[in-house]
Image (tube, rainbow, N blue to C red):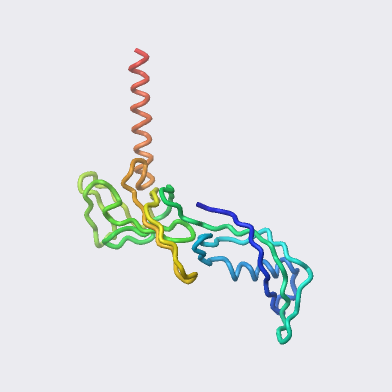
Length: 196
């Protein structure tokens, strides 16, 4: 889930940025500091915007930079259990799928891809359904549900997210569309039968 937080901080603006407007310099410093930062409570910081910075700064002895109070919004991605997400398959090793959710990648174990038995095609680097012949490979869009989240205790680590695609209306997006078409067709036939 994406969340917006309002944050206050004191920022250091180095002399190399004195030649630009104060808010632009502050925005650059804040983007460098926060974008990509992982906080166990906030999630992964994706963007910094709406920067307001005090025009009155402080200079510390021995440091040519100025320090300013600032207030700004951050957009963060915080994975939530049972949340349905969509992403693109970015890697297909023989043990599962890595799915890019935007700011981070998540993992789908091979047993969580579908209910049917799968075989792994090593040359194609894809999973193929034994009965249906359905294929999941790199570049495919998938819809999945978050079943486990492990947020790191250290900011240098990344969150670990596990997904499942075995539930109804989950899986490769084209499979979901096929299922929706089948349901709509069955509903249409039922309505026609009732009308007779």
